[in-house]
Image (cartoon, rainbow, N blue to C red):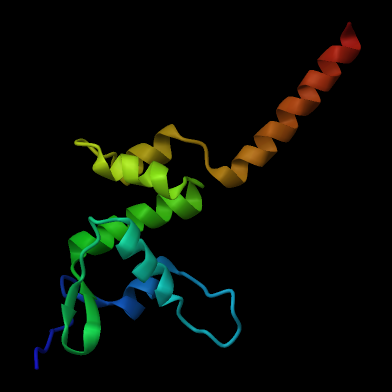
Amino acid sequence: MNRINKTNDAYKTIGEVVKILGLKSKKKGVNLPTHTLRYWEKEFKQIKPKILKGNRRYYDQKAVRLIKKVHFLLKEQGMTINGVKKILNNKHPLELDEIKKDSIKTKNLKKKIVKISSIIKSLKTLR
C-alpha cells in the first residue's frame, strides 16, 4: 500500500481539500460535501487527482490551486460552469489576483445596482 507523507507539499485527500475551501453541506448530518469536488472533476478536465487503491483521491498542490481558482470563480464571482471552462481553456489563464482586482464581487453587485437605481430615480425627479 502506498503511504503519503503529510507535509505542506504532500498530496491532500478529498476531505482535506474540502476543508481548505471551507465548503459546507446544505444537508444536515453531512459533514463534508465531497460530491462537489467529484462533480468539478467531471466538469473540468484539468482537475486530475491521483486515484489509489479503494478509489481514494489525492490532490497535488497544482490541483489544489486549480480547485481554489474554480471555487473562487464559481462561488465568489458567480460565474457559470461554462464561463469557468472558457477561462481554464484559455492559453493564458488569469491568475486569481488579476481576477479579484479586475472584477466586481457578486455580493457587492446587488448593492451597486440598488445605489444606481436610486440615483436614476432622483435624476428623474429633477426633470
